[in-house]
Length: 184
Image (cartoon, rainbow, N blue to C red; front, side, top):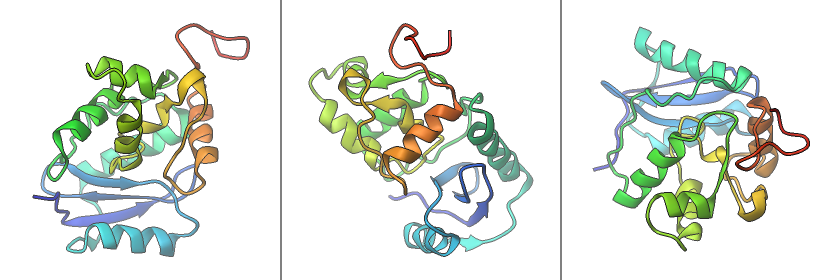
């Protein structure tokens, strides 16, 4: 069964308009900005054909405000926001949950995340799962980097530039110890 959504809303953020789809008690999907709102709206309607664009209920407004805050100040980890995991494979769920546990301003590599999941050598599979993350930026896939802290890929519009912008907003530290240009 794939996550269903009752409603969807577009909302402004410092990185551009984002979208959120919701159902009775959880976030069904989040989408980072696209080239323009028409593209963003079309992609969300493709993902959630039964959802109606509507004014979000109070609880959803709270979720949106927290996502806006993350994209403005990079401090809220959003770990407690409810996500609808239906339709996702067991491995994907494990990857998304592990990525969500990375605190704002911190990063791990795909290989480190794979090792944390108990599947060392599965860095590529972790990267592929993150490329399909239906909850970015709530799923925190932007905090996962390639080997040697290279940017790696990013499936959102703008690609790696968007990923690096999100990390910059969070004043991310690359690696376990601060580097010359990392915040202490």
